Amino acid sequence: MRICIYGSGSRKIDEIYTKLAYQLGCAIANNNHTLVFGGGDTGMMGACAKGVYDNDGKSLGIAPEWIGNFEPLCETCSEFIYVDSMDERKNKFVENSDAFIIVPGGIGTLDEFFECITLKKLKKHDKKIVVFNINGFYDTMFKMIDEMGEKGFLYKQEELFKKANTIDEIFDYLES
Figure (tube, rainbow, N blue to C red):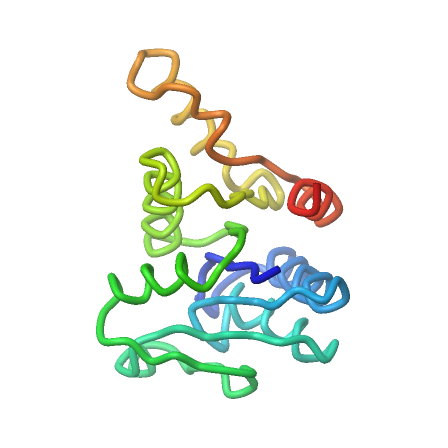
């Protein structure tokens, strides 16, 4: 399975997050899956990619070349696709992935996550999406989404993605 990870590339992340991102990468490789990600070498993306690489796994980085001006690109990817824009990058993520895991991140991660669930809602894909809620990181977002549903702005939001607090929960869901 080709599993796309959406997550931060920030270097300022607490080790509690990057350690679990590394372990997630190890699990991806050890379960013979391929990592698809934004190609960054730092933060959540970099830690996950390092876990994949350290366990002889495969990875596909997707990024515009100019993003290297903002963060270093991962040099250990099995394959790298260079694109012209962030929109093209998001399209390539969907085209090249069988499932999605959202790990803690910032605005870019939220953009990718919401586009991914919107496309699922509009039946442009039917791929599994799981939010890895490390240390309760996404609790506030879940509350907001639940409130949108309660007020009639969303229908059946619980069918769009799965919440997971552990790596085992992620793979139990993805491989079911």
